[in-house]
Structure formats: structure tokens, C-alpha cells
Image (cartoon, rainbow over all chains, first blue to last red; front, side, top):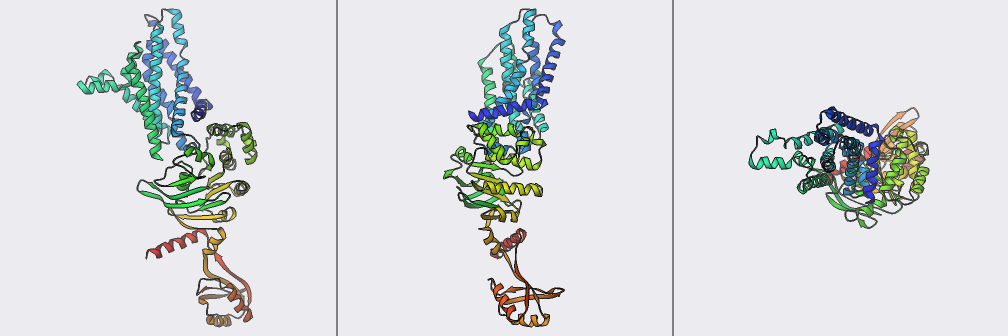
Amino acid sequence: MKGIKAIFVKEFLSYFNSTIGYLWLVVFIGLNFWLFFRGFFLMPEADLRPMFSMFPVLFIIFIPAITMRLWAEEKKLGTLEILFSLPLRTEEIILGKFLAAVSFFGISLLLTFPLPFILSFLGNLDWGSVISGYIGSFLFGSTLISLGMFLSGFTRNQIVAFILAASLSFLLYIIGEEVILSFLTGFWADFFSTLSVKTHFESIVRGVIDLRDIVYYLSFIIFFIYANYLHLEVAR
Amino acid sequence: MIEVINLYKYYGEEPAIQGISFNVEKGEILGFLGPNGAGKTTTLRIITGYLYPTKGEVLIDGKKLTQDPLYCKKKLGYLPEDNPLYTDLTPREYLTFCANARGIEEKKKKLDEVMEKTQIKEVWEKPIGELSKGYRQRVGIAQALLHDPDVLIMDEPTTGLDPVQIIEIRNLIKELSKEKTILLSTHILPEVEMLASRVIIIHKGIIRAEGKPYELSRKFKSKEIYFVLKGDEKEIREKINKLDFVASYEIEKKEDGIHGKFIPKENDDVREKFAKFAYENKFLILELYSKSLGLEEIFIELTKEEKSERN
């Protein structure tokens, strides 16, 4: 536990140690507000769903920028050797890093809170769907973080880590698109639809929190964290 | 303190070390000597828990590294090769992180102690990326000392430093050796002679020689004995020809005397016999010495032995 905390603090502070962390937040929030208010006056009712439905595309670009440095930087600097010579378990190091990235991402979600409050003054906002939307977005983002972190371990180059994570996140997203699914039938259509991060996100954003979707996201996260563990251990 | 038992490490098919065994006794400074790619770093990385051995066992303070890695890692302080550091952090931030990760109590006190000991007070709040190599090395050593470990493991601690910094770091290591067991790797022979109380020579992943520095330099002395005599060249030739302990010789007349070298028949120290011979024949001895081999020559010697063993 102490180990997770030490890694968490170091990783979390390092997002704010460079200007990149602040820049990331400003651009993410700025872009998010701009995209939202662009269609704001055309909206028939007070609804936050337009924001949530933009999140997947934003996340595919923005989340790899959070995760790209997690292992690639340690590899480039050679500090992985320091980490492994400290009396920490491998899983503590992984979880500390994962939680730091998730917390940083969580902050960016918190910073979008002005939007539902503005909406609630203007109309009759359905808080239930807002909360379910945020839970869905948080799970969706955390899933991409586990994937991006795993991929960051394959290179010393952060740009490569970014591109890998963005491409795979994109792939996992589009296999749930109608365009792709319409080519497939039966088992494969179901399979891709179930595998895609998109399918599960949409139902949560609609305001339906289904246990299956939550199980999907959690098992995805556990899978990639475990894969990360295996990858690190086998390389030693 | 450290027992290394029959250690093997393969990178794919490629063996990095093949059956390394040695002990590090409490209080000694063991020098690990070898050319680049000999397997020094691999061995140290296994001992410090960064790499897992393909085969073999490491015991630290009697406990198996594979069974109780956290206990073992607490006993060790490690300065890796090329001293990797978080360049964005200041020494204070970096060492605070290490102290947290190690769960050190009285953090403030320990941090002040290592800051004092390694003399990094001036750069305490500067990003490590902006520090000179000498200071970075000190920060690396501070990290290794933070938890007051019994054993310090340093992989090429002076590589890449300028001569003044090298002397500073060597003095620091000497200072530290008073209270700590040290395992230190290097490819510089004089460094080992200066710092280590015992030396292990490793080459191509196998231990080739082991002993006290002076024993090794005696063992690997060249067989040839060099001399400079004053006297008549012809007479010297005649007399040396008659010596029973000389197998072959060469001499050459130079301005300050007759320079020469000979190979003795048996492999013992015949300088005394030769001095007596010169005295009896009234040749004045200006110089008489056997050369100790440089590291490169020792390796050539070692690989020669290897070839002749095979044949």
C-alpha cells in the first residue's frame, strides 16, 4: 500500500511538474466547451448527452497523451532499473501508475462540471442520466488508460506509444460502428459489437447502467493491467 | 553478506553469464573487473533484483532473493550503470520519492544526512537535468545511501566523469567503505587496485581469476625481465649466454647503457639471481624490473590460456 502511494504521488505530481499537464487540461476542457456550446443554442432541451457522445472521439486522442509516458519515459531514462531495485512489488508500481493516470483523467472530468450546472439553470436537467453519463465516461476513459499504459511498455519513444495507443483505441471503437457491423453477420457481428468499447459506452450514456457494461469495462481494465504485469515480468 | 551461486542468464539464445559464483564478505570492497560486455552489469542487475536469473541463486544476508525480494532490496543500495535519474525532478523531490517508496521513517533526518554526506546541498532545488555529471553521480549515490544499506552496489561509478570528478567520487567511495560492504564494477584496472580489497575478473560471462589486487598483478606479470646495465656490450653478451636460468634474451646498446630483456627458464622471480650475477661481474645495475600487465594484456593472457586449454 505504501508502495502504491509513493508511486502514485510521484506520477501524479509529474503531470503537473511540466507544463504539458496543464496544457493538456486547458486544451481538453477548451475543446470540450467549444464543441458543446457550438450546438448549444440549437438544442431543444437541457441535455448533457451531446457532450458525452463526443467523449469517445476526444478520448481516443487525449487519453494516449496521458498514458504515453508511463513506461516509455522510464525506459528511455533507464529509471525502470531504479524502480525495480526499490523494495516494491511489480504490481504496486503498476497500480500506482494506473491510479495516477486515472486520477489525472478524473480531474479533467471534474472540470467539465460547470456544464451540467449551467444546463440545470436553463432547463429541466435529468440528473440521473448525467450521473450515469459521468460513470460511463470515467469507466470508458479508465479502460483506454489501461490499454495505453500497457502499450507504453513496448517502446522507449513516447510518440510511438501515443500512436500505438490511439490506433488501438480507435480500432476497438470502430469495430462497434454500424458501418463495420453491417458487413458481418451472426456470431462475428455479436462478437465485435460486444468487444467494442463503443457499444457499452452508448448504453450507459443513454442513462441505463447495466451490470454487464460495468463488468465489461472492469474486466477490460483487469485484463490489460495483468497483461502489463506479465509483460514487465517476462522482460526481466 | 552476498552469496552468488552458479548464476546463468540467457538473453534469448545468447548467454550473458554462465555459471558465476562468488561471495562478498562483510566489510570488504570487492572489485568486479572486466571489459565491456563481459557480464558485469548483468550480474549486478540480477543481484539487485532488476533481472531474474535463468538459473542460479542469490542470497543476501542469508535470504534467497527470489523468495524474499523485498527484504533483500532493503539491504542493498544500488547505483546502476550510467546512473539513471528523473531529469524533471529536483534532488529533493527525487530523494523524497525514494524515501517514500522505501517507507523510511524520520524522512527529513535521513534526507539531511545524505545531502550532507554527498554534498549536494547547493543543487538541492535544481532540476537534475540541469546538473553537471559530477553532481548527478552524487545524487545517484545519495539515492543508494538513503536507507543506510549494509551493502552498496555500484556499476562503473566513475565512467563518464572528468578527472577531478573521478578523484572526488573515488574519495567518496573510500570514505563509504569504512562502514559499508561494497561491490563495485569497473573496466579500469588502476581503479580496482586503488579501491578494492579483492578482485574478480570476469570475461565472456565466466569468472577467469580471483584474488587480492597485488596477487593478481603478480600472477599476471609478464614473464620477461627488463634490465639496464652499464658495461661492455660484448662482455655482457658472453656472460649472459652462460647463465643457466636464462632461456632467451635480447640486448641493445643505448646512450645510457645496455638495455635488454630476458625470459627466465622457470617461472619464478629470478631478479635476485640476476642482480647477484651483475654484482659478481661488476656490471652496474641501473634498472631491473618485471612489468605488470595492463588489463588488456591480462585479457589477452586469459584468452590465450583458454585456447591452450581447448587444444
